[in-house]
Image (cartoon, rainbow, N blue to C red; front, top):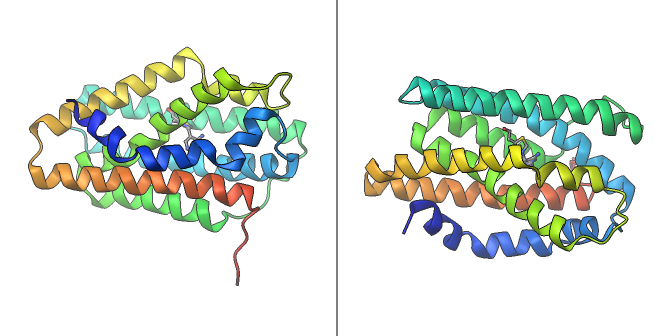
Amino acid sequence: MKFTDQLWTEALPIYEKIKLHPFNQELKNGTLPVEKFKFYIFQDSLYLADFARALATAGTRAGSSHELLDFLQFAQNAILVERALHLSYFKEYDIPYDGKKAPGCFAYTSYLMAVSAFESYEVAVAALLPCFWIYKKIGDYIYESQVSPNPYQNWIDAYAGEDFAHSVEKALAICDTLAETASEKTRKQMTEAYLTASRLEYVFWDSAYKLEKWEV
Ligand SMILES: Cc1ncc(C[n+]2csc(CCO)c2C)c(N)n1
């Protein structure tokens, strides 16, 4: 059994909760209130900018220039997605450019940047994986079961696309190769990091659905 198959099984309860979360259910049905989508898009633009930093940082610690290039391409892509969000949705939904990270976004980005800088390369790769994999799975699920017409069609199409699928396959292959030669202790740490980042994916959607604010 591949290491990433084990990861998928371990994190399955988290994935199921993400799938059934009202944010994703209402997105799929086209009934998500626009305020929640706007909140999500703005927070995601902040997320993507730091996610790109985390990817580039992890990449500098890769064991080969081949993997460094993969991570730099992932990072470049995250920045391009972030720019595309600004160009399309920010205009369409009249989203203001100012604002801060909500607690959910803050927690997730801080975690990814810290792991990428201070944990081993193997653990960093495992922490960065849910962003790719869970999005791909959720994107496919929403795409297949969506109610159309759907006001969020463009967003849905973006994550069900071929290019994104290719990046996910690459990230999975890197993680599996690393796990093959990793010690049992490192594999445990990788699993823990994968689970934590999966929980933070949930937190991110939940934060948007609740229009989360800092309490104090
Ligand atoms: C909270 C959050 N998690 C994951 C993604 C998905 N995503 C955005 S860029 C990228 C890979 C770039 O190469 C991936 C997987 C997102 N948008 N927001």
